[in-house]
Amino acid sequence: GAAFAADRAPKRLSLWFTEPVEARFNAVAVLDGNNRRVDHLNAHTAAADPSRVEVDVGDLSQGAYLVRWRVTSADSHVVHGSYWFVVGFAATPPAAAELLGTGQPILTPIEIGARWLAVLALLCLAGTALFHFVVPGPARIGASTFERQAVMAVMGLFLVALCLVAAAQAEAVAELPVPQALTGPVLEEVLFSSRFATLWWLKLSLGVLLGLLLYRRSRPGLAALVAILLLVVTSLAGH
Image (cartoon, rainbow, N blue to C red; front, top):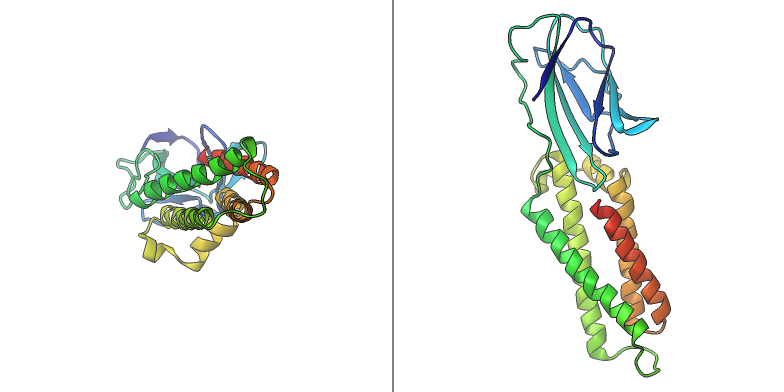
């Protein structure tokens, strides 16, 4: 909750981050001493610098103001924080504001468990595909009953893990427990309007395709290629 003073009221506030971020229109809230919002609800990343978020403000009178922000980092974590500033003179910080701290991402037990489960399932699927490609078995069409059952089980774990990761992201975006976080606007942002959504759907599509190829075991070269693409997409989601 750092603070600074300004002799003249700013017309625009800029927030700099250490890496590119995603910011929705309401990502930055500027509140006056009466907890009234004075920004224009137009937060956005700067066109020339995706690591800078800007928001316009109205005519600010003398006093203390709180800036609360929440953005999505390059590794798809929701980070948040706050600071306050003074125009002219103010004896105390904004009275109604809860300072949100350093903005470090908070990993919930759901997210930690889901990400580990996804990684383990991914390693099993990708490892199987690459092993079949490098060390081909006897020429045949299809896989054994046991192998098919194993592939389907791992695929099920992978899909469950992806759903849990999406639920954890919704929890972080809404800043509410999962049952209350699963609303239409939150799910729209998580699944359709963010970098997280793009990578999530890519992982889902590639994972399902890889599972089908392993289930049939008829095109080991294509399965190996899909496995590599899935590993690359997962690494992009990690940072």
